[in-house]
Image 1 (spheres, rainbow, N blue to C red):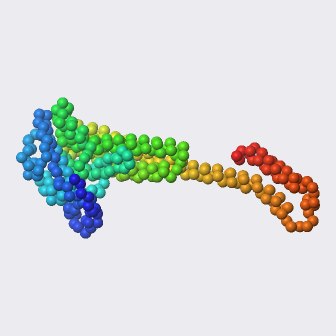
Image 2 (cartoon, rainbow, N blue to C red; image 1 turned 180 degrees about the horizontal axis):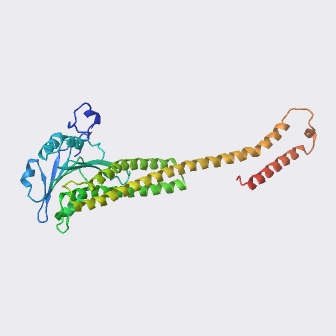
Image 3 (cartoon, rainbow, N blue to C red; image 1 turned 135 degrees about the vertical axis):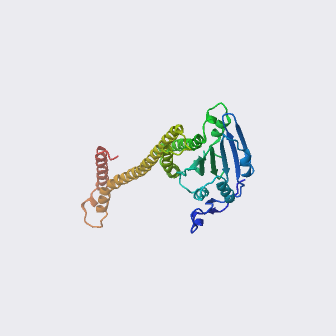
Length: 356
């Protein structure tokens, strides 16, 4: 069970030397879990490890190993993993900081990648962000994340299946597969947001109201979250597809090239949606302006019709004793006819001008 506590802010690291291990994120009390997967063309093992000491006992030579660490808030566990696999303290510092931007670093002995794993609530369409750190070593992948539940189940199923070619490929391909699973989830999120934007657009065209514009601003905020996750990732994947690190085989670079194309496609879609939302906001403001103009035009026409009538009534409302029409038998009827003719004439003229 997750127990949420106070958030440990980035300012907790203020004044500390580089490489100081401080967890930046929401404090948890869940116990860190270690998920172990080992495979080759003829070997497959999957189990949960109670401690890191069991790792060496289970590793078989000439196999690929994936160690999934769930719960990075436990600093001693992360530090022991760093010591066991010779991970630099600066990298461990980045792993513990859940507010890092996506990036890829080549450390010769290993490759370090940070991504943002996103998920979306199908009802509220609110995006949940989870930082995932991946380390590629020699026949080894280490993955670090905080919350349970991820997008890696299809990858696990491919590893379990002996029929596929996954087991014949190295850990560098597993790195690609994990990154590709995260990027594929971006397309699902974009599809949900795109359908929501279409519904909001129809509502704005039929009857623009404050509720629609509120939903539009929410979609704009979620797109901003997605943009922050994808834009830095383009640079990270680009560095991987051009790397000459021995841990990434030349034949695997083609897969990273394909992943780079997917990231570019996500970026293009995000920017398209952002432009669509901007145009919809302009549409909403234009609709409000047009409705206000219609109201003002009606009020102006009514006011213009009554201006001459007000003038006539004002003239005959003066308290002068000698006014010729006051003693005329048909004066009252004449004034009404005059005002009627004025209104009719002005109305015909307004209609001819297409003012209403």
